[in-house]
Length: 83
Image (cartoon, rainbow, N blue to C red; front, top):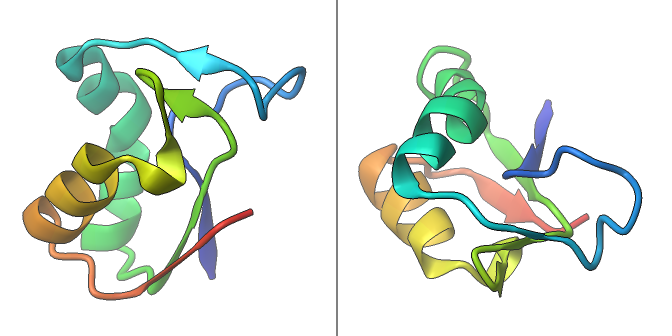
């Protein structure tokens, strides 16, 4: 299974141009909880990044999201693909 769209992607219109601006608490409590569960409990092996920007940086280039949280904190060892 490929879990998508990581993360903060909650609209279809202008999804490649929208910049989702959220603080750390909102990001973790609302947008990341389901992804964390799929990795830790569901043992997901593939994650697909979203199109949108997150706090000014495209999600697939967002170091805080991809490295700090996904890899270092959640210990995700699987494959990350772009949409």
